[in-house]
Length: 173
Ligand SMILES: [Zn+2]
Image (cartoon, rainbow, N blue to C red; front, side, top):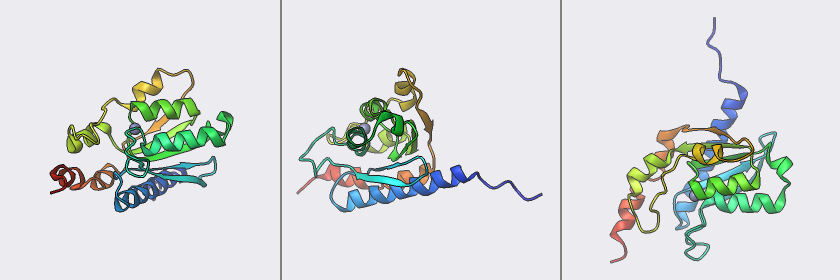
């Protein structure tokens, strides 16, 4: 018998997560932190892509891609619709972003790299002292379910951070 192919949903998750990785690369090339997210609708259509906004939002430490995306989503769509949407993000949502995703009512999250692995490369960098709390713990404290898939394609996600924080630590001459 032929091996069972991955389900269509699993294939779509990888495709859309890789698209979030592209958003992270774009973010880095624009001078922002190398994180990216996107929101997909119930049929997998991309509703919005979101880069990290630390620099573009004027040094806003809360301008994580997922927080900006959840705020946009909540302003634009009803929770009943967002419950059937999926947020794809290159790195696991931090406690703030998980809270924003919860409050917006987004029903599903797929992430690449864990916060724990991210912390190992950012350390206590002044621009990204990673808040290492598993997003599942935040969501479990909520009153409506949020499905979480991840880590997924973790090595590809980790590659997005390659050399970034080390180089940044050197700072301007
Ligand atoms: Zn965050």
